[in-house]
Length: 299
Image (cartoon, rainbow, N blue to C red; front, top):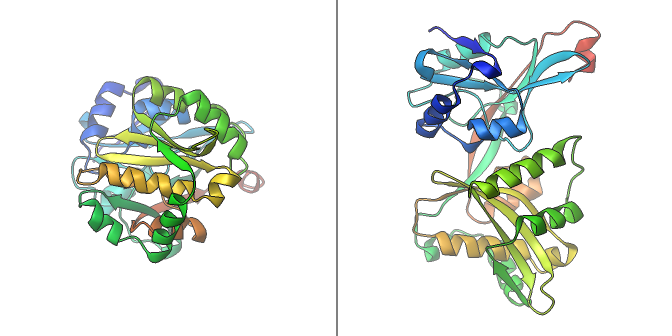
């Protein structure tokens, strides 16, 4: 198999996006417009006619160029509309032209690895009737829905981008790394402009105060659950549980798969599992071939 290394300006993005759209394991994270935002100047490894393709998210530090998983991009790796064997994956890995990389491949990329290198993603199919999906919720989730319904709050499907941006800045539940917020804002604007997303929220009925909000990215038959945020009042009222239950009910009996994006944090995992979401695992690969002292600096 002949694999070519392409710099950013050598990539045929129209052909690239067509192949990702038709790949058996395609994902929104691998679309060229998405990569352009989260990893400007990304490069690629491709075979003839882009039958197999792999984005290379390049980053620089202290003058060194290396590969690392971009923000807001859970899974990359090798994509194709053909079967991707372990041998093909290894050929692509062998062709990576960098001495350092930490990359998260996708769930369609399988090869023998230690269990520690696998991370969980959680998916929920909405094909069934709502009553059947609801029956798959655990008892704690059902109790939280009942609790949420006792509060004076309502789910809305049309929060403005500017309102969402203001809300998440106030209620982020993690310390964003350097450069994360500008990337998020650019991505949010792109998704809004191209109608790839809906922003759902929960508001208090009397004051109209936002209790919770989430960015739902629509691509093919998947909806990605991005940047969920709740205020202290929203956490107390179980606002996000109410929001998710409403989304599931409204979209039941469709071919939509709700992609929770997964987490290795036990509390977050329990939350996703409580809705009956099923784990799907994806591999992480790591290599540090830098000499001392740079192998200690870039990690």
